[in-house]
Image (cartoon, rainbow, N blue to C red):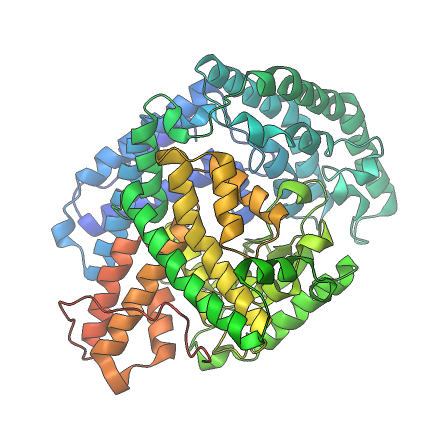
Length: 596
């Protein structure tokens, strides 16, 4: 959003009525996000930026920081006492988000624009794939973006050079696959490039002659500018960036790294927990879950210890598919079984559908086991549960039920789609992503698998516990590596010793924590908070507790910071006739209705 448009909108802000000013601030903030970050606008179906990329020049980055500070100042001059309860929640979230973002400006996050998990080599194909592809005009927009890609690549390289000058890079060990990820975008055959995928899948409604013209233009851009620019970028990463990258793995080794990591932990978890406190919580959870896992091993009658059992799960052929299509079919079958059980747990279900697709080949090797991509009713795009089909011997069957519950229903798709469909809350909030809430809900959803008729097989139940353990281990190893001096090998070994996850997945996970410090902490922290709130509601309401009403209330305001969620749900419990106990309840951390 340029200076003139922003300044004009700021000047037009109402100065008297609190409600009117809040609405105007929310409108401006949402418009600012959509116009400043056109890729977000594409995913949301917000019109106007279809031909652009986010301006990553230093001048634009500083302009966005200044505008965010201006919005924070404007929000401070609003009389919140004159707002109703719903508006007070809107205001609290707007102010809290702006304040946290401005506090983060003390750290040079923009000088870390690329790693093996995120960056233009990952985001560009995703944005192009998410763009509308119904008319010739849609394809003109894609061509315009392709034409502007060299500028974005150059801006990214400049930021990386500035980071190198300040000795600020991702750990060197994590960058080994980055050149390959970049080169995977530019195969010799344009038909194989994810950048041009849309031009070989054009709808029949576009006349053939017009299709040929559009496709030829795309191929010319690809050969003339995209191949050489991406190739130069890959060479820069390979010859300059990686050799000079940091060999230290701890984020706290960066300048002001201890404060920066603490900020990241707070930002991701939306709590005031310190890294040391989270580490202790992780150790306690690992011990608890390990006891549950030992119980399952005894139930199977397996003759051996924990290590032998996990080796059995990692290596026995009965737990693996021989081809990718069978793996995807099983995911789809699990999803269909889950869908039929959801009305017993939820009064409100989303209208937006979702599908199951394989993770694209250009990123599958260093990508995690699965992820969810939100859909958009405005953009006419369904949600997608992306499952990794790379190296089938690292994709065990026993993890599939828990993974589907987390990524699809009733996990991410249900929660995110419901938030998008909340017509009575502002679009700014409908599309908000608080990691502690969103990922905490996803992990909490895994425990609902028992109620959904899953985990009836002891191996699948062990798989669910493995996934719970996975998130508990994160608390230990993320804080261990970044705060407490653990080595990468120590973190990998701790993960291996306490989980049945395949070793390829474990290495990918550890490297993820190295480049996204603090992010992985939000899952277990969020899950424990949701379980605590549920235990409090069950204790306060007794026989009047209704799981469908509880879930609808929990999800009914969209994603929230955990501190705001707890306060809101306490109010809901009291509105249902419950008395909030001063003694914190003990949540059922072992899952709902788990068989003995």
